[in-house]
Length: 423
Figure (cartoon, rainbow, N blue to C red):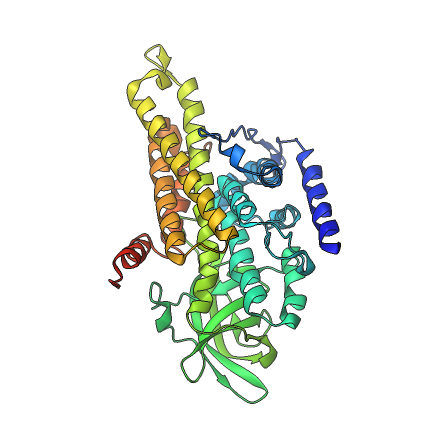
């Protein structure tokens, strides 16, 4: 009964957010931004496959992005700053741990709802989606799945409200596609563990309150540790000079004889399968998120093509531009069907890691190709910050690499269908 009441309260909050329609805002004191005119393509009437709750959650996220993200994201990207002012809003729409049970502060939603939230946020910006994805799938998920009851009660409610922000430390300077080769390690010192090592390319690291860190014990077994900001010897230098994910905070995690309390080890799963299980959840979210970026590029290009007149007619009336646009909507529709089916399998507990890899690889490749074609439709205007396309294109160059590179995901499919690993 309590869960039902909490769920109804969440839905009522979603309804309240949907009433807010003011999409015009100001950046600074002087610069007025264009309203976000995005209209989502649904060529195969996929809304008919969604429940009313799915659509309500998606629409609330869409309105949030239009109101809070779109007006400020171009300036944030130009300045290479993460817009921290949107954290509370992300929490309010349930973007942090939406599938975590209500008893731990989550919204108790299903996997399709999670995917739709990621789709709408990435429609705004891949970097903002990265923050929500890391918080949900790489921080809250492992604590919920692998942590103790005390760890769940201590961290999950604060992560759900955005009071705490987390990050995920797996990738190392010399070990990306081969995470099992990590050298980060911890030793048992009686009343605590002593952690040493380094991680890099870590989203949220510069301002995260906690880090889920994967390291080897003295027997070489991988375990997850919860490392808190303020622990002596733990530093998070920021990564600068990025051309991609500029509105996302990226950094390193440095551990120099960090004393980690023994109660901060997550005991319920160890081995490389533990962090890879988290990555399955994150990659699933990316498969949906990339669709959002593609939809934004397509919608922008379609609107521009209808308005841009050359040789006395809109360029949308020319065969070459129609070819581009027709191929875009075809690929988006295919990706939408793949993501929806994968969501059904996730809800049923049937989705495999290889299926998730296929969707992540296919949908990100689809999105980056659409971004490049959309940029051509806009011509020179496509490289300016007046439109979102070039920002999406640069962001997707990271998305196609992180959480499993494009090539590695191809080899995962190859291994799954042949039975022979090629890496």
